[in-house]
Amino acid sequence: MMDELLSRVTERTGLSPEQAKSAVETVLGFLKEKLPAPLANGLSSLVGGGEGGAAGGEGLASKASAAVGNLFRKDS
Image (cartoon, rainbow, N blue to C red; front, side, top):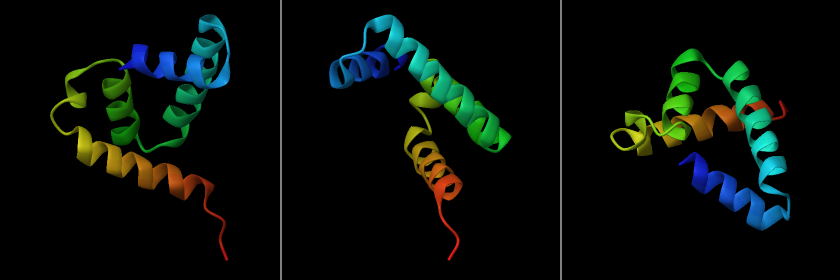
């Protein structure tokens, strides 16, 4: 999955593969610091190609999406 992510970032931004890798690693590092441990571990498995990607991927993706949304949500 990491290769696909890097490829998409490279294609959509025009960054070199090395720049895309640096950007993706920076974002993933930030998310791993900010997400609750179970989600951070799942993110590592998902992006790193671990088994968490195939089996509970959809549920993990939904939880990760909600958690990331909460990080950037503005309180009214």
